[in-house]
Image (tube, rainbow, N blue to C red; front, top):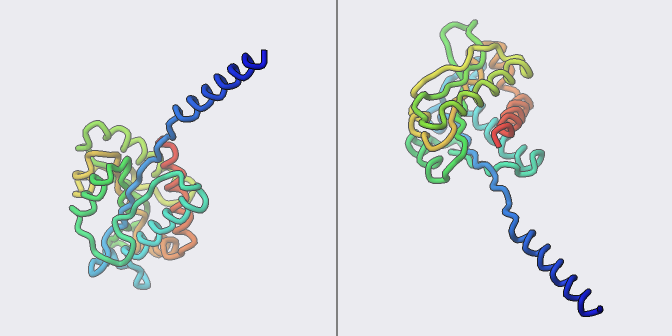
Length: 211
């Protein structure tokens, strides 16, 4: 009887070990965040000297920080630049391809000679093979959240063949224009680092819908 119980216990233990080792950890989604411009390329320059390259880098760094501290490293996140340097467009897309990214997000701010122009735009490419529909869906989701939760004026989801979108056909990709640094309302919002953190959290929260 004792040997039988020992054998049964051993079988149960082996079964448990098989279950544990047989369970594969679900891989994290690999996200490449692309803060536009950098270095000698300031991007759009707006009211009070606010520069596009600084705003988008602040948001990108907040995405990394919040993923680590609030979202418990839910994603594997890489930036195309971590400081004020200029990276070529081709090198940005090569990084996404080399890392086999699941999602590529390019961050930008808008500019206009019309100081009344304001609002958020999200761009996707039609040339993304099997990823096009998913990119469009995610773009609409994010656009709606920026519009409804943060109060950004809506300028819609649009199609464009920007280089960073055309060359990231291996994954979902879209380009965000957060607002116009030449508009007093948009620039005031984007120039506040606390608001940059809110935008970063919203982006991460929406990326969670793509799992």
